[in-house]
Length: 125
Image: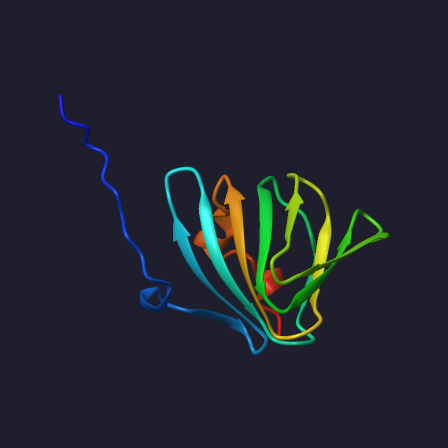
């Protein structure tokens, strides 16, 4: 029996960059059950408080993000290059770019709102 599954090779520079607003852009790779994203945030970018069912890992490659976690944003976590933040599903959070930042976000399951472009909270100017 042959395995019908196929491997897929990606190069970030070949993936279209989606400009969400003047300070936020992303590139997405989606598998069957996991989503990987390069997220580009310019200094001062604010990702408004939100929550989602998806488990999330945020790995900072360059720059730094300040996360305000919880319904009231009382827990502050600054994540810098080489560091990872794990956010369980349904945990409210917001992020602020302390400097120009490139992060890798991993989501399980994939973010349907990102795929079908119903993530209006990210598209505000």
